[in-house]
Image 1 (cartoon, rainbow, N blue to C red):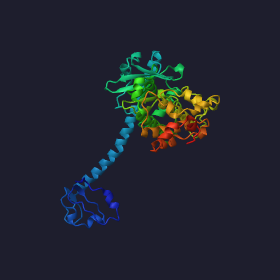
Image 2 (image 1 turned 90 degrees about the horizontal axis):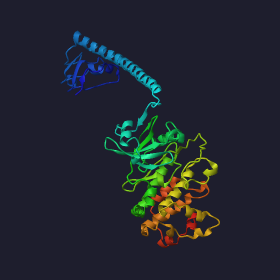
Image 3 (image 1 turned 90 degrees about the vertical axis):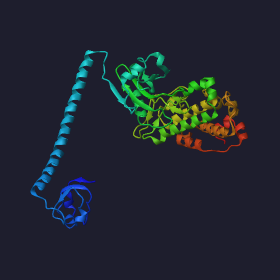
Image 4 (image 1 turned 180 degrees about the vertical axis):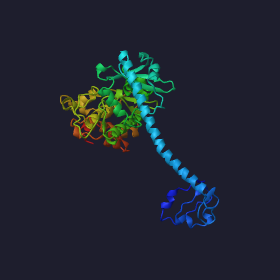
Length: 434
C-alpha cells in the first residue's frame, strides 16, 4: 500500500543489491542506481505509474521528470516555509501574552483589591480545576464547608461542578507565615508534586492568589485517624486487623519518602491528625507543610516544627532535620494506634528513672481495651509492631532503625509463642531483650 514517488535518496545506497516494490501504488521515476536498473519487471509490476530505464517499464518523458522535479521543489519550499511560519506565530503569540499580562498589571495598580495576578497550576485533575469553581463550591470558604483546622491552614470539603469531591486546604494569611509564595506553601507544593504512593494523599493542584491560597487534594471520607480513635463507636470499628494494616501502610509510605524519593523527603509532622482514612480504612499521609527535602549539599538545619508529643527529643537542641526524627514520630504514632490514645503517659513511665515500675507493665495490658483480645495471628503481628515502635523511640537517634527496615520487618510473617505475647513487658521491648 505504498504510494507516491520512490525517494531519490535510494540512489545513494551503493550497497543495495536488490529490491521488490511490486503491488503498491507507486509512481514517477525509479532511482538510477544499479539495484533498480538491473531488476526484472516482476519487481515493479502492479504499481500506479512507474517509469525509468528498467526492463518492462516505459521511459520517463520530460513532463514526467519535470513533474517529479516540481514536486521535489514544492517539498523543499514547504520544509522552509512551515518552520518560518511557526517561528512567526510563536513571536506573535508571545507578544500577545506579554501585552495581556502588561494590561493586567496596569489594572491591578488601579484596583487595590486585586494586588496580585492569578497564578494557578493544575496537575491532571481532568484538566478542569478552576479558581472560580473552588470559590463557588466552598461558598467563598464558608465555615459550613470547613472539615478541619491546622497550624498552617483550614481544610474544606468542596464538590466541584464536575461532581468530583475534593479537599481544599486554604492557607492562613501571610502574617501567619503561610501566604502566597511563603516557604510553608512552596515546601508543601514541592513535596506533593514529586510523590506518588497509594498511602499518600493524592495531590490535584494549587492556587496562589492575592486573596486566597489553597492546595487541592483527594477527599478522604472518614477524616483523620485522631478523630476516629477518639470516638469510641468509630474506634471499635477499627479492629486489630485494620489497625495492623494501617501501620503497615504508613510504614510503606514513609519508607517510600525516605528511600525511594530523590532527594529523600522528611515529613517532620507525623501525627494521627495528619493521617487520613478512606471508606475502607486505608491510610493516607497528608499535610506536607513542614516537609523537607534532604539535599546532600545542604546542612539541613531548620527551625523546630511538628506536633507537640510527636517531635523527636533531639530536635529541641540539635535543630537538624534527619530521617531519624521521622522515626521517633512514627514510633509514637504506632503506639497510639495500639493503645487507642496518645501514648505520652506510657512513654514517660518507661523512660523515667524515678518510676522504673512502668517497665514491668505487660504489653497486653496497654492495648486498646475497647477491642476484643487479638487473635493468635493478630498477636504475632502486634508483637512485631510493638517491638518496632519501641526501637523507634530509642533516645539515641543513630540506634533507631531505618524506615525501610521497619517496612520490611512488618511485611514478614513470624510465628510467636502466645504465652510470650501475654508475658512480654514494656521494659523488655524497650531494651530489645527479645
